[in-house]
Amino acid sequence: MSDGTSSSFAIGTTTFNLPRILERPALKEIAEGSLAAIEPGLANMPLEYIQDGLKAVSENMLKVLRGIRTEPTGSALPPRMDVVVDDLSRDMPTHMLAVWSRQPTNGATRVTLYPTHHIVLAAHCATLPPLSPSKPASPSAAGETIALPIVPLGIPHAPSFPRLHTYLYNKNAQELLGSLIPTIPPSRASNESDAIFFARYSAKLAATFTPNILLGHALAVNGLWRNACALGIFDRGLWHVIDLAWSVLLDSLAISSGQADAVLGVPRL
Image 1 (cartoon, rainbow, N blue to C red):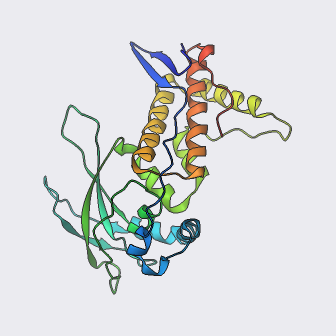
Image 2: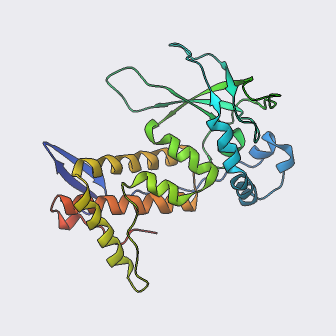
């Protein structure tokens, strides 16, 4: 059922209340001078120009991140850690994020480590405090080590962080959407209206996947949205994906549970 601002879905013995719209936070600008403090050559350059430049080299930056190997740190995080570098195709990461969910859990807090480049975070995350200075030089050969400072980062939903982190590098909206919805959109006829297309997409999801699977994907989208709000990320492509995935998944849940009044229709784009 729906009350206009939220929709309730009964799955098994549990009822889930989900907001019909994932509201965007008030815009906050990237702090002036924050990027030049990391790379002095970026002083007075437009933010969009910097973001486009980072996107242009994102594949090699991501290759470097994927080539970082770490050793177990034990129960306590050290202030710095040595990592093995297997790819030298671009600048080295500057920090190691120790990411954990701020939401309460019944068990021990799980911390996951992600190498990152400070400049990418600073160019997109308006509410992330400046990180400690770090600019490790590239090792002379693959397989050697560099030292990275560890930065604890508590966010609302740690499981969705890798998708968001990758998107900040490559801005690949299709890749992000594909990771949030369990099947790609159907082909669209040239004369098909938005309303018919999205209704057909939602119906396909409802007919293909169980409510539990659809709910799991919806909760992942919700977690990604909460992370974007917490970090102050105001990227148009990101919000387009969030709005589309949320609307389609909520409609598919409404259809699969027989709640026609909860169908949203055309997503806010």
